[in-house]
Amino acid sequence: MAKHIGVLTSGGDSPGLNAAIRGIGKAALGDYDMQVIGFLDGFRGLMENRTTILDSSKLSGIITLGGTLLGTSRDKPHKMNIGGKLIDMTDVIVENFHYHHLDALVCLGGGGTQKNAFKLVEKGLNIVTLPKTIDNDIACTDTTLGFDTALGIAVNAIDRLHSTAHSHHRIIVVEIMGHRTGWLALGAGVSGGADVILIPEIPYNIDNVAESILERSRGGKNFSIVAVAEGAISQEGIKKIEETKNKLHDTEDKKEILKLKAKLKELDKKYTGKTTEIARTLEKITGLESRLTILGHLQRGGTPSPADRLLATRLGTACVEYIQNEQFGIMVAAKGDGAVAVPLEKVIGIRKTVPADHPWIKSARYVGTCLGE
Ligand code: F6P
Image (cartoon, rainbow, N blue to C red; front, side, top):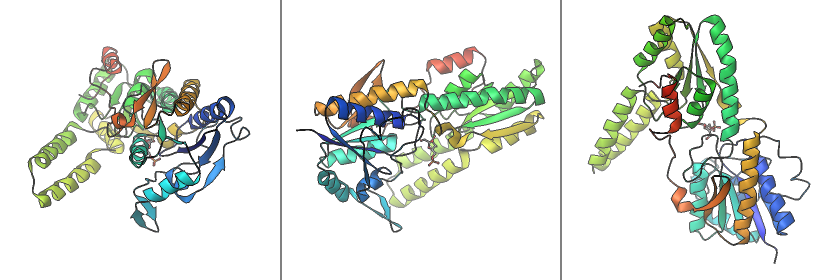
């Protein structure tokens, strides 16, 4: 009997989602005679039973489109905002899965989506996921949908900032997304030839950053591009956070635990997302005029790159093969030129950060980029 599959996109959108939906839909309809429905706005649409039939007309002409035709949200099945209250709607979602006689549900999303999908696997649903995020921070996959496009956008921005920084002899600080990891800032910084790259994995010392800029000035280069990951953190900040984490680890006192957890949140707020302050401080220490550019959601918008379209089509179509073979509870990951099935329990709860010995870090150091240490 022909299988019924559902598809949803969840979490922040990213270029390549429509190409993946197309890959899933075309392989499912054309090669396996499956029926495909899309749920609108992530897990919320699955809970509210808001659907659209993904027939061949809906799947045509979408490979170049950014965003997601299904819409997305950051709703979690087990913590959904219903009239201002967070309610566990997992049972309703399970009911709707069966109401639509689904043989499988494909969830396209980032780290949070992988976790939420796994919770549904634990409830007995047949789930397959695809890794999607411009942050590239999902474990067990070479890369994620949207990363390459966002990288291209950030590099293009750095290229443009170079000419204006150069003309005005300015420091230009550019904030790049990436949540708590530095993949995007490091990749864009290295390929854009940034003079300083600050990422969360390498806590920075602002005096060292200023000194590297002054050294450039002394060498006759009176402009600098500073690429800062949105999650970058100072050495002082990380020290305080580590101290608090150690205290938390050593105590069993419930009141103290609550206090320390609140302190951790406070410290996180105090020491991350400080790009404006970085630009101001660098101007003050170096005496060079500084400007700040925050790329923000520009990095998530527009047409997917060819690499993302290829990845989306590769993973989307492979995902249908796994469904046909009734392999569930997996993420379809990118490995080399192919796709592999990774059990979701191996993926969840792990943030793939940039390793200290990563070749991008090594090569950045070789070309004289200051990493803030
Ligand atoms: O996870 C993707 C991402 O774009 C991060 O890089 C960024 O921190 C976050 O989402 C922004 O989220 P929102 O779109 O909800 O503002």
